[in-house]
Length: 92
Image (cartoon, rainbow, N blue to C red; front, side):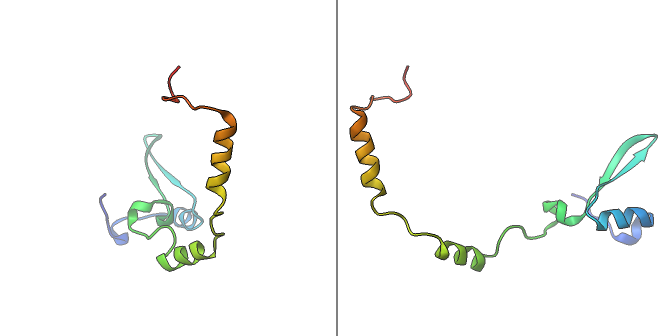
């Protein structure tokens, strides 16, 4: 990706205001789209960190429900009630 400084490009005020509102701005050349200006938050490759911080992710994981210790037993009961399973479940 090529990066230029803001003073190298002259954007009309209405284009800057549209980008501030997170609207895409299409720049036309000879009545055809030449390029699109987007807000940096809408384009992850600009280096902005995405997602949650590690501490927030850990907090969410620790606040989640604990696994049901009897879940495996329930699955085995279901398998036993079905009968013998095929060797290759994907075979026709």
